[in-house]
Image 1 (cartoon, rainbow, N blue to C red):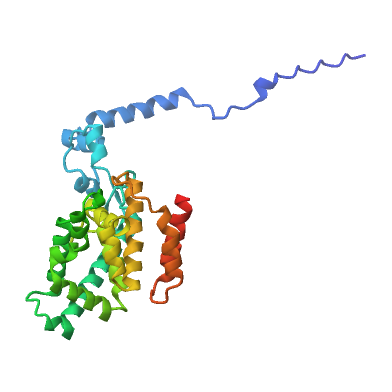
Image 2: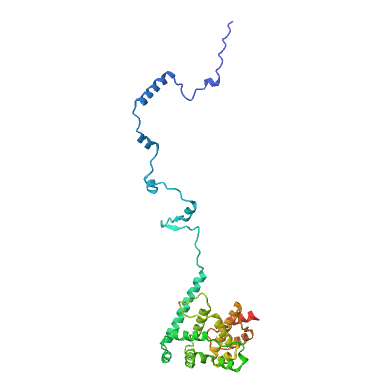
Length: 318
């Protein structure tokens, strides 16, 4: 009976696994390394300039044009001042929009435009008077605009007496003849002729003159005429609160009287808002009477506008 041979033990799994790289024999590596070393030793060395060019890459032509020399960085404050943006559409430099400039309010531009239109209408009215035959018959000697603005300035420089008028008879008579004393009878006749013959435009002219003299945004260069508010207040009080002014209005036609009363009340209301009603003129008892007269009148073109303003004042002072 024979005993079977014992089988050889299995090698461990680590010994069976083949390496990732094939085994390299040392006797083959040594000659190859020797040959490479000899080639490197006997080959000519690289020039230093060429080595420098190889070691440091040259800038591109675009970089050379953009930065020819290295400049020191500017402080942060100077860089912020020079910040600009480039528009992709126009390829032009534009101001930095991070700090927008203050824009002029649209309302102010609209007011300036309205002032220019008023000035043009006033110039046109006086140019129209220069062409009228009845004005030419008076032989004013100067353009009508210069003539009548000089009259208005003369009246403003010589205001009537408003307070304590009834202290003596002389003051009452003086106020009753105020316009005759200041501008003369001839000019009163001329003004009466204009009020009669320019009925279609006189309300527009009165409105433009009132808005021009009371509007602070209108420049005197467009229309050279200024009326101080304190002088206009004196005349408003004269027509509304003095015997001389009231008697003068009653001698005029109803349309002129109503227009003067309307604008006089607007001036007194403005003085109240500004705290400049130094004579203490009260328009509250005058408002209902003026409203009734305007409602019954058929001679006013802007009748509805006048009534709207007066009713608003009536609600304000009641």
